[in-house]
Amino acid sequence: MSRLTGPRLKIMRALGVDLPGLSRKTIEDRPTPPGQHGMKATRRRKSDYGVKLQEKQKLRFNYGLTERQMRRLIIEARKGNEPTGDNFLQLLERRLDNVIFRAGYAPTIIAARQLVSHRHVMLNGKSVNIPSMRIKVGDVVALKATSFKIAMVLETMARPVLERPEWLQWDETTTSVKVAHLPDADQVPFPIDVQQIVEYYSNRI
Image 1: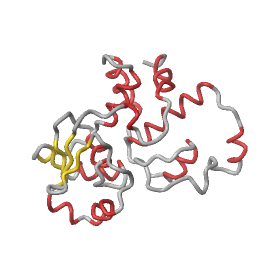
Image 2: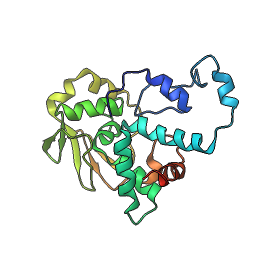
Image 3: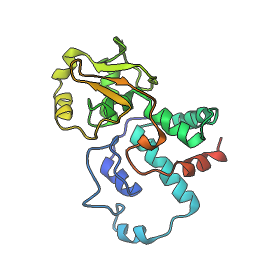
Image 4: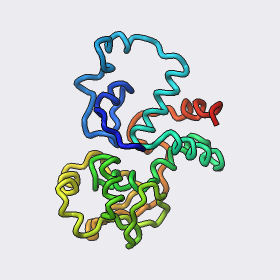
């Protein structure tokens, strides 16, 4: 997505959920929407459109995608044999920048995207720099040996944001992860009603 320069915590407060891919911070201490009328906003009932938009924005901001990228993925998800929503979530989780984040190399997906773009990442032994690359079963993802000297990487590996998902097999010897199987739809690390997102795009594509 275009570079996000605004306060990330404010976005999460507006959406009412912690988004680990967006920020390490939490809304636990300030769960109300931003602004002087935040408390009142929590009591107002959202319209059907408002609910659908909020669910869509959760994914867009957590995975750092533009609206155009979201539309392309939902179109691709419709072509699969599984339910559109399940396919859509799996496509998001299979992005290389997300794998770097979920493997514990970076504190957010935004930081993981920088590691990929600056060629710190190896995919099956080859240097890559495309964050949107899609991993498949059997792929091995790692950082270059020199990249483990980066302070951010060292800190994140010492204090990971999330537990590694079971679909990523960690190899302590090579400090790499192998894709054991494709992620399930329920692997998204925050509550999401994906059917609302499918319905949001149903009349827009």
